[in-house]
Image 1 (cartoon, one colour):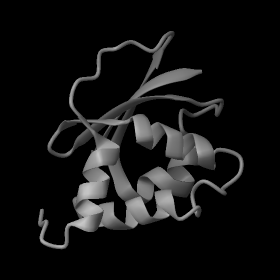
Image 2 (tube, helix red, strand yellow):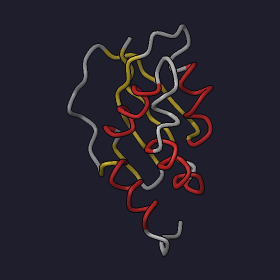
Image 3 (cartoon, rainbow, N blue to C red):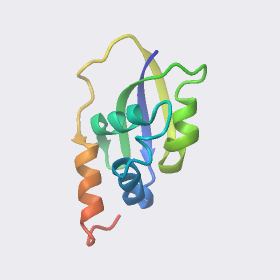
Image 4 (cartoon, rainbow, N blue to C red):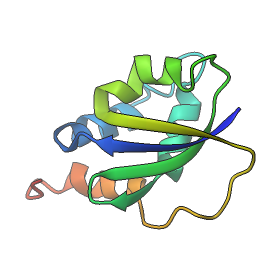
Length: 110
């Protein structure tokens, strides 16, 4: 099933999140690691502390495995809405670009 997801970021954990997304530790996770990395590469920062993205999941509870293994470590207040198609309706900055900035800029503070 396809979901539109909205979540708040735990700003103090974003450097760790970027490291986990890029060092293979999430990507190598079965069965959905590569899907998680792909979703975060497409996620959009719509407000200073809010992300939105689309993600496919086949769990009985939406994103159950993804939350148990990754998302709940770095995100909170996760909301999922069942949708039937991806729309071009999420406006904001690339979350991936923001992660790179936060990761490499030692002067960046939250």
